[in-house]
Length: 491
Ligand code: BG6
Image (cartoon, rainbow, N blue to C red; front, side):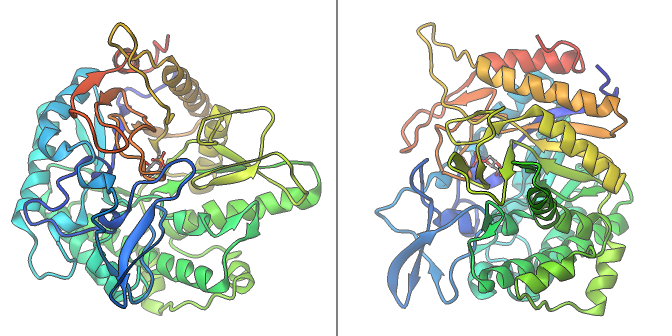
């Protein structure tokens, strides 16, 4: 195995999926706080009042509420993120367990609404700042390097209502003020920052099988939101470097690998265009600091007209990220031909790949896809890479011996670590691997607790029952060996 000496092994989480304590110590409401529980067959909903009437609309992670709506909590609905796994009150115990596994890094996000409850306050909320300071100090106690996502699918609800989910450039200033507060406050405690989680997700939900499933207005919305986020990200990167030259700031892309179903040149071209829109558009904007040449084609195709200023272009060029980070779970197959055998999950839809196995949620296990993705991205950007999410969502069961024997998870992770190693041997500069949901957490896509990813089991079900007690699974002891051997011992 060829993992570098200081390779950052660890795990990843997001504030809204673990913390709970949604209305504690001055925290304001995030969009996630008005998102209901869903399941494999039922979407999650955003609940709100429109003209005084309680209504709901399907809401994927990162979505905003309709124009004119005011977010509302419906007493008849269940909101799994309100309590989540209550990391807010268990963080010491959880970080100790991460340390027991030997974590070198822990990826977590900051809830914007703990720092600025509505988003537009003059001064930050001291209790929120203190909470994350304590968390980072706890990590440092065990030599765990925090890897911090500034925005992970939870905009302040107030801002989302007021600026209709990033449809106003004032959002840039709000975000930059928030990021600046973090960079100043946690100087010396944090080194690695990610500006927006899966920034490209705004585009992923607009098409299916390479075909538009959304109207022009949805494309206009998504592309404008992205432009403001690119500028916000770039301005944050510049500020981070000014505040502390040691800061390393990355983007974060939802890394879905698309393959063509057939050798029909039309499929090959469609596949290429899928990569351009879904993956390279955002990657280029953040790593090269400018829009790719094919952007004009995309804007024309979708009838998109963007508010872009000369200053925006300058900011983007001056605020290129220092590293490329991404999540990787699966690959998809696209085609121009009719397909009978289809699969679908959140962010995933396409023809079924006969060479791969699928999870209960329709996600294909494809470690070669990870190697492919790493090699393509290193070639394109020549930046250090971090795999900041990877894992298998599965239903775990406590066996008669009181333990969880999650060999399926071990197998999945082993294959992906081997694939990552092959990419490293091919010259790719990979710096970190943080498995998703190192401790069980609320699923972003379905809101289920039962779609578990963790090395650590948390006793809580899809309806909110359970003691919240933590328990190591078999994979906990396996990952501990992997880290101790720097990836040598994968048995
Ligand atoms: C990524 C997100 O899309 O995938 C996470 O960054 C999310 O927030 C993860 O939890 C797994 O998806 P899901 O829907 O299984 O929770």
